[in-house]
View 1 (cartoon, helix red, strand yellow):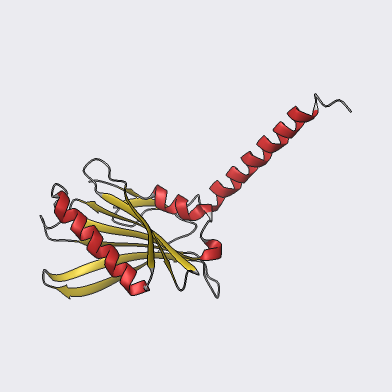
View 2 (spheres, helix red, strand yellow):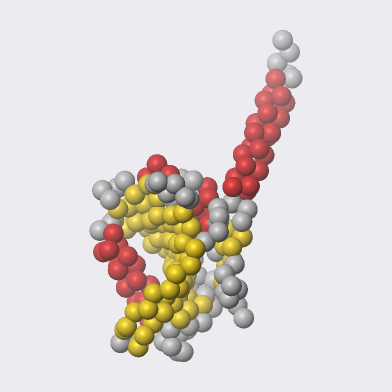
Length: 186
């Protein structure tokens, strides 16, 4: 057997399998979801359901809109969620770095407390005039994971989240969902 021909054949096979894996991943998460108001785009494995929650706060009644996708199985895993709330003009001033950071930390602490979880990481990924944070929380005795993104666009606060079991937490669709989230500025 000529060993000079084995390496190119193996390289070809490796490249072929990597291309096929990439194609199968992109086919799983090809759906781009845009809500009726056109406020954002996100790649999601399916169509997201919609709900509204009204909460009375010190600022008055606040409306939180939630979009959710989960597979129609007995135990859907992972679950993809986008929440957003419009705040009164000027409350979420992106130029006030201290105020925005405090808002993000308070929001994250609320999530962490509700889940009784452990914060694994929290990092700034802010873009031009759009403060953003990413985070990861382990909860349910380390058997479940929440990966999320918090961001502010004008007077709207977005929370983009994926809840999953530990065994499903490395699915490429999870990071694809979080990474693909894009606010459509009007």
